[in-house]
Image 1 (cartoon, one colour):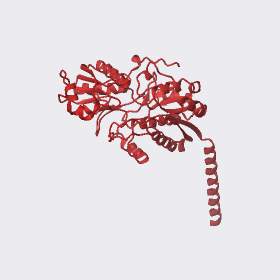
Image 2 (cartoon, rainbow, N blue to C red):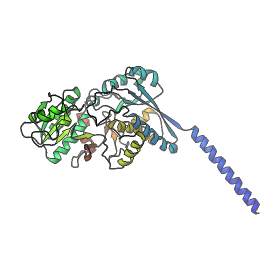
Image 3 (cartoon, rainbow, N blue to C red):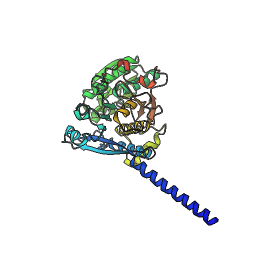
Image 4 (cartoon, rainbow, N blue to C red):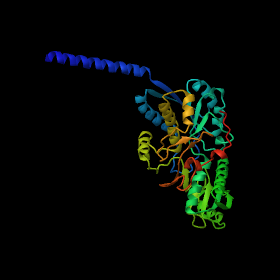
Length: 397
């Protein structure tokens, strides 16, 4: 009797194992594949502005890889597999040719780490019409407004969002009188425009505005230029627009009056910062640093979010169809965790990822915008940047 029972148990176990194996085979064969392309171009190494900050060549690509690993961890349980292909165009190469020949019809989702003009060129290609491009490099307001493309989603906070984050904190501190200093580049002018918009929006007063036209020699600047340059009417805070970092670092502690510096130097508004530790950020910071050997930069974070957004939409819709995923990403149901407290989501009117903006000093995290007390009928995140009634983006649906 015992031998019969033992034989029966062995038979049942054997049949159960065979069943599990057959289920696994079917599961593996039924696995959905989501192909993702990463497109960037080598950058020319700029002249060093400081020996303290080495040029980072691979911003973005390591964030993509980390997110693909995270997506595939979830994909083991959802029957989905995320496959990444990197397209890194040489400095003298042609991005459009690479897109047409390499990406073609094989990839519906393309993480694009390119300047604004190249993003527009790629987005307007016939081959890109039915794709979804994730811009992880630009902060241009125009790309979210009159120059928007309905096949491009933007992951980094634009200049308007960053300026609004600074203005909200200045309003909280009651530092309402601004002295605005502007650099010589086109990017500096654009950020200055965003700062003026935010000052008007939140009731700040720009009491003085100057263009920086002095030398970029640190010794001379430290000795005389800044002190003389900043002898203006009384102000609460010096606001600087110097996106290339050519002179902004020289302003701190050298102004004629003792005043804080904010903008592109001093207190900065960013998507991500190495000092950020709340809401599980330490975990992602450590994982990235272990993999990359350096701190996560903004482009790394944006690229990580882009791929995680694809993963979140694919998981929730149980699909790899681009139209279903795009509709879900732009719907109110979409919520992406970004280690910044509030869930992140895309604005349906311009493709901008709405998100908290970190306010940070070089070695400390100061605040997170939107600042408490700034209200909105839908979400406080829409107090940063262009709200729907203000947007000039005309997406063709």
